[in-house]
Image 1 (tube, rainbow, N blue to C red):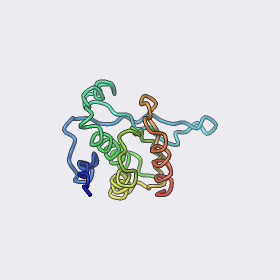
Image 2: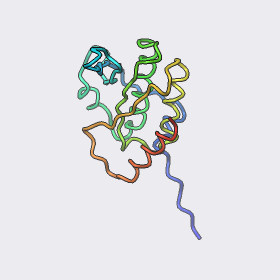
Image 3: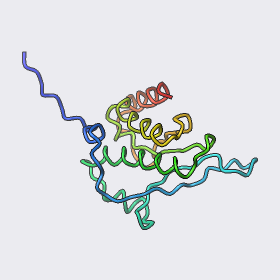
Image 4: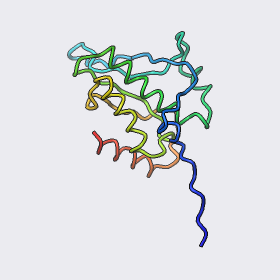
Length: 152
């Protein structure tokens, strides 16, 4: 019986801490409770270091860097939110590319570790599916949502 070679995990860069070489930052769009007239959370949106648009940054992401980029965006958003929003009430909405989540448990682990490192409560995190990506595998998406809910 022959055994197929084990495929290289697209998460290898995420798990090893490989950095993403493209310079980027995040902008934070307020999510406002109209009745209270108060921002209760912020959506993290990728931007260039000099305010370049999200499309200009995303255009530089290749299929080879997609996994690492998605993970780097999550970590950067959480790190910045930890310093900008030190209270325990503010929520952070983080967009993610469902097709970039290879293994849900492994992919969220780095995000949760970043939150703990900067003192941002994991209960303050909301993960939002990007609206501009076609989901290729709905069962995988269901597994992602189930695992993220299970982990809090």
